[in-house]
Structure formats: structure tokens, C-alpha cells
Amino acid sequence: MKKKALHSGLHKYTHEDITRLSPGERMKAIGIRQDDDPILRQVSRPFELPLEKDAAQLVIEQLQHAIEIAQQIHDFAKGLGVAAPQIGIDRALAIVIPLNEEPLILVNPRIVAQSEEMDEQYEGCWSFFDFRGLVSRPLDLEVAYQSVDGKERVTTVNHAMARLVAHEIDHLNSILYKDLMPRGRKLLTYEEYKQKKQSWHYPS
Image (cartoon, rainbow, N blue to C red):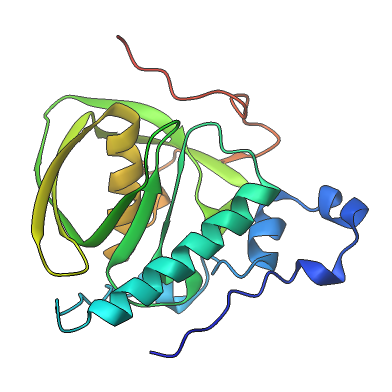
């Protein structure tokens, strides 16, 4: 797989112009695939590891580059994540970065267990970032995944991290969070959303 830079598209804007762009327009400008893109509705292809170790490492680098750019144009108060299809790569790889914690790199991830206890929180998605939606998800997940050298790993994630991980694994399975919302429940616009600078709240 030949390395391709994620072109920001921001070079054609002045700083003043950028501040006037909506969050969704900024994500589109840096190359994030939007929700009408067919790649977001394809199940991502798993890596054959360690045979495809170099290809997986390249995708990791591209996702990290996308994260670096996104962090320059948006303040992520709840942590963040991005999946390979969102930068146009149909492979099963995502990176999740919770607040004040180390990134979790998920290669060929799958959820192997989840808690019965659920909660509802508002989520955003880089692929339609001008909206927020109230989504119910498990409070705890057990996730199996691989390292780039093919080692099998299992981790347990909770609360905000569980929500971030579930969101990104959904992307790899062609699911967007709005698919999980009950019929009739509407998305809020970014302007309507009142918790922009707040982290998700969970009982201690």
C-alpha cells in the first residue's frame, strides 16, 4: 500500500475563514469522509497478520496524522477516535484516545462481551460533525484485538472509553451512531447541543 498524505484542504482558507467554518466543514476540509460516502457503509477488511504488518503500520500512521490535524482545529472535551474508513481506507483499524490517557490502537477489533448495564450520552462523529445524537451503549466492554505483529490481546474498557471504542468498532462494521438511535429521536445541531466543553458524566 502506497503511503498517501491526508491533505488538509485548509491551505485555501485564511485563519479568519477557518474560524467561520462549522465543525463539520472543518472535518470535511481535512479529508474526513462524510456520511454520504459509500466507504462508511462497507464492512472493513481485516488484516492478515503478521503478513500485513507493514500495511497495518502505515494505516496507523495515517490515522495518527488525521488525529494531529483534527486536534488543531477542534477542542475534544470527551476524548476522540477515528476509524480507517473515515480517511478512505477500508481496513479494520481504529485509534481511540480517551481524555488524559494513552491511545488505544485497535487492529481487527471485536467486542467479545458487554455489560447489561447501559447508559445514554450524546455522541459526535467526524463524518457528520455538525450534529450530536443521544445514544445508548453498554457501560463496560471486553474487546479482543491484535497488535501489528499479530499478537492477540484482550482488554476491558469502561464508561467513556467503552463508548469511544464501541463507536469506532461500529465504524468498522459499517454502522453509524445515528443507526442506533430510536425511531423518531432527532439529532441536535451543534448549535443546539449544550455540552460542547464538558466531558461525559458517569457516577463514581
